[in-house]
Length: 352
Image (cartoon, rainbow, N blue to C red; front, side):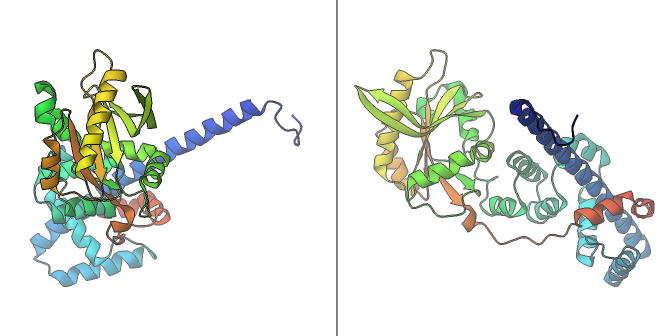
């Protein structure tokens, strides 16, 4: 092959490049997961060693400063072993003393970063609540900021509290599932500007549809935006239309930039009746509607629901600009971490 010869078939070349890119992304993701797993084990071992030695020797807080200084002297430029983080490692090890429990939950536990774990330990005393947020973090790829916001917003405590008409208009077998499928509030952390109208918000969601789907939860697939349906020869358009495989129904989302207004319920009721008449398959369940607003009064929502005949709910959303400030990063940088994990003495010290 001549050095300066270009590919004859660009489609073959482009396909080859696409395959290379996918391989790189896949293996980088696997490498990141492997590094995170080893990092958590290292931090657990260091924390466990500290816990045992501090208790056995009755060491005071001053000793942690000495340990931190000695480690950083041994590994110049090493990050992640400050006094503060050594305390975090000890807290981490003392919170999860059962190694069998960690191994059993490996797919979930080791996909969550150390900084996420420390935040959960400090903010969530109940183990079930922590695992709930771990699942949400992994599924939605939450940053520490987003996780902190979710905890502040009491996502765990408010599950199933979205105002809705599910109990009246859904089959008995679906009521509980539908209630847990939808949230009272959604994080649109990929939207970094306050939209001046609903179409701008819709455009941001469609451009980030994969992240929006992850945020919606299990079983959702995207059908389309501005989905057209006909009623008596006139065209009507649903902002966003999805299908949920678990509920086996269409899910219509109507976007609103401001506060909920009672007339929104009537409009959604109209859409859902039209979808059931024109789009729903015979073996599917009634379509569900979600009115997604910036804010809502539950009293107004309750009054508005008295005039509807279809299953719907009203949820709110938050944008990225409303999330808390940057959370301090206490993990080593990638190069330092790689060197640390490849250095036998570092692992030996962590196992003591």
